[in-house]
Image (tube, rainbow, N blue to C red):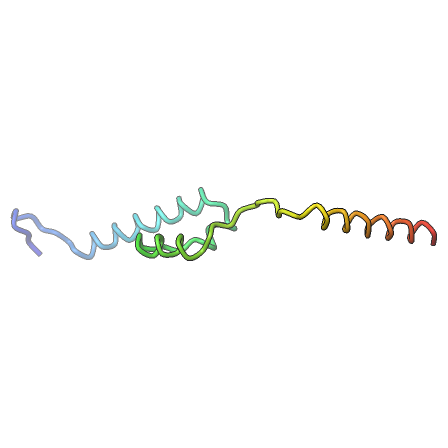
Length: 88
């Protein structure tokens, strides 16, 4: 195939080079991202990302808030359990 500049161009060769480049970039990205995260990553468009952010809150490691009475009750139950074990 001859392009407008009069030079020969090989479309299949360019496609192969682009495919190799994509594969190298993917491998490089997989080396950077930990394996656990890379399995969860899938490409999304910007519109999908914005919709997902609105629908699903980000997962975080927040400490669950507990009322003081619930805490006292749990401590009391643990103390009873310990005393029962010690009596055995």
